[in-house]
Amino acid sequence: MSANWGRTCTRTCCVTPLPAICWSRHRTCARCRNCSVTRTSRPRRYTRTWTSSTWPLSMTVPTPEPSVKELQMIKLVTFDLDDTLWDTAPAIVGAEAALRDWLAEQAPKLGPVPVEHLWEIRSRLLDEDPSLKHRISALRRRVLFHALEDAGYDSDEAQQLADESFEVFLHGRHQVQIFPEVQPTLEILAKTFTLGVITNGNADVRRLGLADYFAFALCAEDLGIGKPDPAPFLEALRRAKVDASAAVHVGDHPSDDIAGAQQAGMRAIWYNPQGKAWDADRLPDAEIHNLSQLPELLARWA
Image (cartoon, rainbow, N blue to C red; front, top):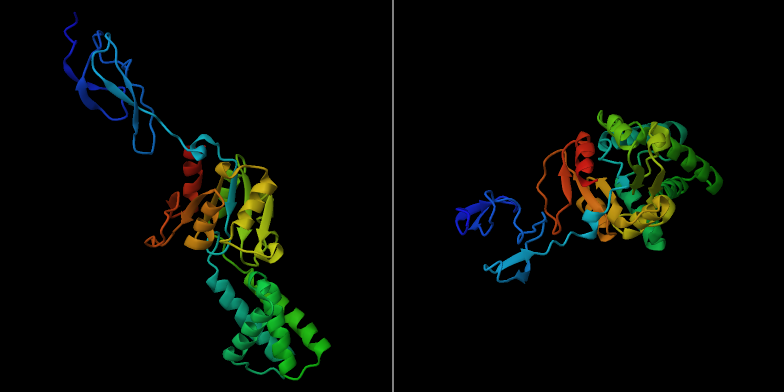
């Protein structure tokens, strides 16, 4: 009988070394015949008991239960745009300033419109047509039209000025400074994954030179529904022809991006460059502080 028989040792076949009685007749504690442990992120549940005259110690074996997500290779990665691929606020401030300057020159009757008046128009329009909540371009055009009409322009002239002034705003809205790591990261990811866009905003990746990286771009304006409703995420899955378990969404907003994606069955990566504290109930599947961390993270999941 081996000197190892029945001695206390550290079983190296487990995920973490664990003191146990070694019943191996071998000189070393190789992978036990009784111990078949697979790494799992869930608490171990001991369900089966092995006993026999050969193996006198009753031992339990954890039954690994990898989720469907863990079994699926990532195929689709979708991105939010505003405040994920660039900082939105400076562009919006600049666009609003350009719009005011244009209106002062081209629509002098309008004058300096009080913000309260514009919000009153906006609220009235949303009450009349709630779908405008997800169609922010159409909403802004209508607000401008009614403000110009209230200022004394006839309907046709007000509509023309509203359309032209909106284009001024939209041009300024696209004067964003794309984060320096965005294009190198997209370049890497596009070689392995299908990439897509899901946004509630009205930024257009075609106007920003990013369209070639993405197989599709979905915006609430076109769909008539926005995040966090699962519908945009489900549409992305349909376009890419993948299961939710093989898809991940990257975004900065805890509700719109993280909760929305998870409700659709996707994994969600929280882009948190400022290191904010998480204050929602359900945690994101991962957190990054720089988009350059994505390739390594997704490689681990793949």
